Length: 114
Image (cartoon, rainbow, N blue to C red):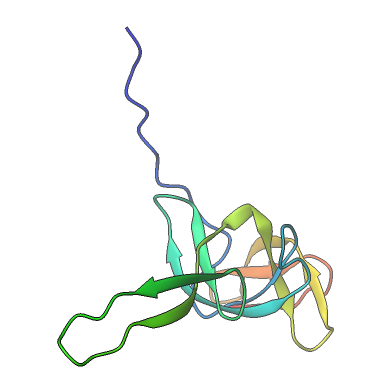
């Protein structure tokens, strides 16, 4: 008997507010801020990347319909953390500071993110 596929919550390497670069797909190379993180689907919404167009019908009398463009989710494996100072995308590592906090570090630059 086949089991129902249950998506597991995955630990993500990006958080909302991070600056990331898209590394795959139609918007490859674009840099933007993570607006929203969807851990259950392991997806992120990046500002200015992966636009989707929706056609909205008028809801009330006299109102006109409209075409709305909005950012659609991208899988988290298709984005990389981006260093604004060095202008380079990098993988993420984890280390501890002197006061014992666990922080994220860019592997290429050594820059601490958190």
